[in-house]
Image (cartoon, rainbow, N blue to C red; front, side):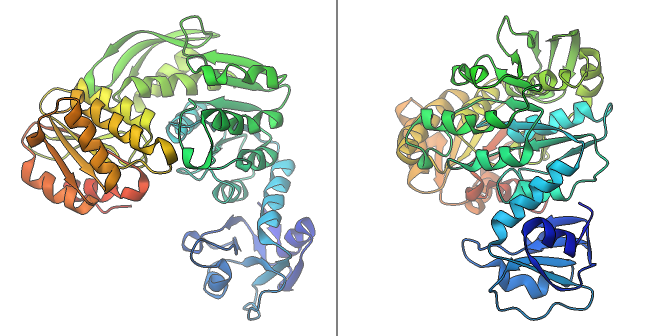
Length: 459
């Protein structure tokens, strides 16, 4: 954004205290991420209220969006407070205003799995042909995504946004802000089931974006996911299906090369091309297919996808393959986990040469599905790995039990209580040539296990 504190106050119906001409170039809800020129949005958190950090934030931020009744010191010289009744809806209105003011075309990526990777792939495919901005990392929520919108270069042509949710209503809020010209669904699966009665509840919640899709835009859906079958009837937009044998966008003649990636023929509505993808796993080929189908709506041709594909890299902690010495290969997918994603990565591990080691952390927010999902993950691990390390408490125990019940020998199953103990165990038991998969929910902290093995600092 390019606004003064007075402009912000006008948009959100607030009042300025301090410098009305203070110029703003971005926004942030996390005081640790502030940059010079930002607007700090003071929101209540799970443990602390953002208003506690306003004074510190204004050492970097130019202004802060705060409650009208907050007891705060006067802002420093050339800094401002913008006082409103409630900073959260004001923050969302500011993001909606920014979206209205810009001539951007917006591509929104949603689904239950692979959103961040597919979003990054789509941005990379578009970048050689358009001025592209994209939401960073997994900043896909009603808190993080508006900050990404407000911090974009106004001169971009296309904004690629990841839209996520953990409860009903969140995607409706994001849809009202984004108003996308393109909406891409990856795959819908039982994720965050703690907050939904069943899978159908998740399917309905994911559909909350559809009313906000431009009628002259494009809906891109996964033909292999029956949960999406009803979505085309909820929009007037053009529909591109990907993944099915008869879909407009599909992959054919896949040649898997283990951890070296794969080669396949990409078929898009405009033509086809041979693709070399240096990322392991069928799921990464499917992620690229989804991104390529979406990119075709922006005029990117199959041969142009082929030119970009060899340079694609997985986002950090989302399937990167790291050599850690003694011929040991580590597949770092430690960022998050769901039953579907764990199954996909175990399928990849099963095809790897050498001794296969699965380090599986607990999967969070599964509610009533948790016990069955963890036992099932253990059963799948039993057929995919030679050594299993289950990390966490009771649900990690269920992973171990599932593996035993599926026939994995007890001596090849270990359970440890946290990521640090997992690293200690792995240092003792790993052998030259091992292939190690690390996968678990973010809260398990398996990035620390990866950092301990690679000598890098955990995020």
